[in-house]
Image 1 (tube, one colour):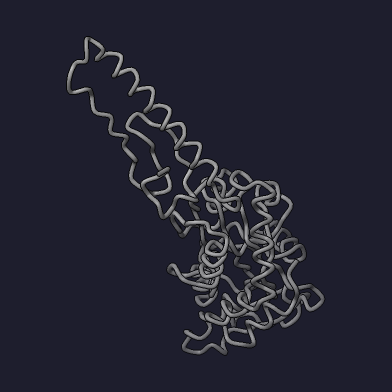
Image 2 (cartoon, one colour):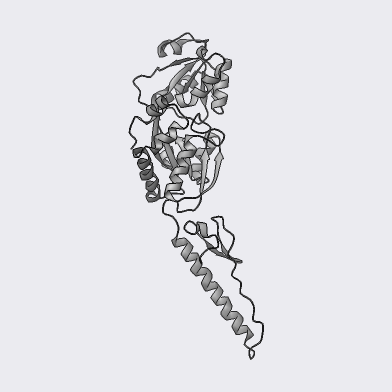
Amino acid sequence: MACQHAANLQTCRCRPGMAGVLCPCGGKPLRLRIRPAQRRLGGNTKVIYDMRRNIRLLLVLLFSTACQAAAIPACPNGPLKIGYYKIGAAYRDGKGYDVDMVRELARRLGCPIANETELPRLRALKMLETGQIDVSASTLATPDRLQYAWIYQYNHAKNMVLLNPAIQARTLATLLEDPALRWGAIRGYHHGPSQDKLLEELNARHKVVIANDEDDLYKMLGNGVVTAVFAQPFSYGRWLRELPNPNQIVVLDLYPETDMVASGLALSKARFSREAAEKWHQELLKMYQDGSLYDIMRRYLNESAARQMMQKPIE
């Protein structure tokens, strides 16, 4: 009888409170009902009150210790706060392979989920850094992000270049000399060393236009506000299919020598120790090896796209 919310007994981390034991895992407070003595026993009523008060405090401490000991190693800080951002088949309107993957990992590791929130990309990263969210996904590992998050890769994708019909160039060299070039980029995104370097150079030439999210980016590309963007197939596929004339957008691989970019599961270092994060890493590897990660991808991607994203082994 350590916690009234028995379903979450193994995950709660109770603490003593004025009204009893407060259970932040979602259960109702366990109130320890100590009734005052109903009759006087030779003037010893105060002694009875003191004894019962001491028993109550002892029980509270025992219950608190039991709940602390029951914390789950993979989520030592209790139920998880998950932050997603809009990106193609990975996440949109509460659904996507990122959502299914994180939920399956949490289920396997016995970690309850407190809430799942859609956030702008930069805000999700900042909240991950400060520990306001525990987990995010579709995160490229960069030196600055690795300072505040454990990042474990789970798929690979290629950055393609999408061109508006106003652009006639078909090579990177001629594209960069085209006076109609205006490159669109989403705030807070990284694309890989070569692509990020190009965007820095274009930004210095005032050739970069910033979009809030992928919907904004593709809208600007379709309207000609920007004439080129970096995008990955799992992201732009849906948008192209919805265009009246998808052939008007040219898709090129202008970095054939560049490896595919790895997307990763990100765990806040403010919320997970190395040991706790490694449990997620090992479970993620198991999902790759037993095929369940591929099965999740197939719910949202065609077979060719799913195989391409999973063909490179994860580490």
